[in-house]
Length: 93
Length: 374
Image (tube, rainbow over all chains, first blue to last red; front, side, top):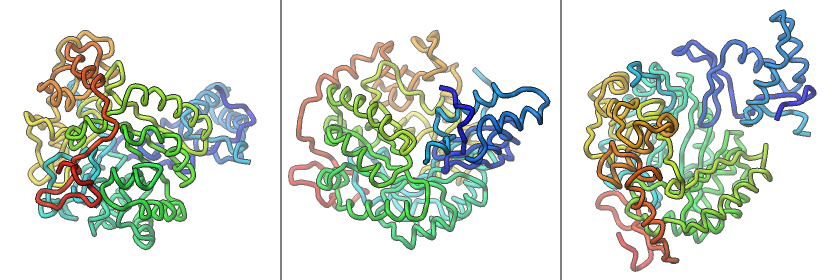
């Protein structure tokens, strides 16, 4: 299921982003797991503060890349939300 | 077979085999290492430094009971300094509030506490020692300190019928994650297999209970359910392949591709006391033995699933077929599958008796009933 444009994604509070000097990539670390991030993914997650909406994030990055990246942003965040690594702050009341 | 060796992501550091619990399903080897054979603080710190340089991101600090190591804080602090994400895998016996604070200050990220059942009698019978109050108190401190908190419960015939209550207990304790792991038959669990194996009906009911709980607790508590592999059609995938992502350092410094691998007596495992971790990962005979797929025979070799389940578990193939290069006999394509089916058909006895985990020469577990073996 895709995240709504009005969702306010936030990283799971148990996850953190670190830099892996061995693979020279940023990495999302959480209990029993790790996801290597490419630059785009890291930029998306850096904007997931539980305040910005998916639409806000897509708009910011579309400007930065001078092309419409909305579909990619929605798909990537929806994948992480499916794995519960990203939560919609609107759901937390 | 891929000739390049990937980088490991996860290290399980078994700091000790000493443990106050006597669980009859413990995955530690039946021949436990005594305390004087354990790696020192400095040796563990060197192992972690080498592991980080090799690419490890996730660290499990396990045992035995890691809290019996008085230098645990120093090991945790070293891991944090390296940028590792550290999980303390503990029974919680021996944890005080003060120690939990020190571990948090040292940089532990995540605490996983084992619970044995949703009611005291069943829990303490399987643990072989009074432990209920200590665990529940420890869970409160972990939550109070804001650490990531996982409840881990090993499932078996004597607690599966209380699965719904176990899930509710974990939620009431405030667990962020709940790992429900059906017993896997390694180490002490092999000795106690007949007493631990669930019935087919129990397993079927458990799937329905977990499915409902996943919905009910969505976004409050992540539930990870590990089905018993004997009841599955295909084997479990050996941590993404032998020597692909995962390594274990045993209390005495031997490096294993999986915590159960020391049961494979046809392999010799190098130790960090004699070799670097990088050499052992890249070059040692034990890590190369089943890396990739060149070692596979039929039915694995031509199987479309060979890069899905990697032939299954080498430890299980050795334990049940006597050949670590055989197809995991759990696989329904294995000619040895009948051995598993025979065991499933034999599950009957309602009142299990256990052989409790003990150190060599130690007294039998407190709480073991008269008539129990061991």
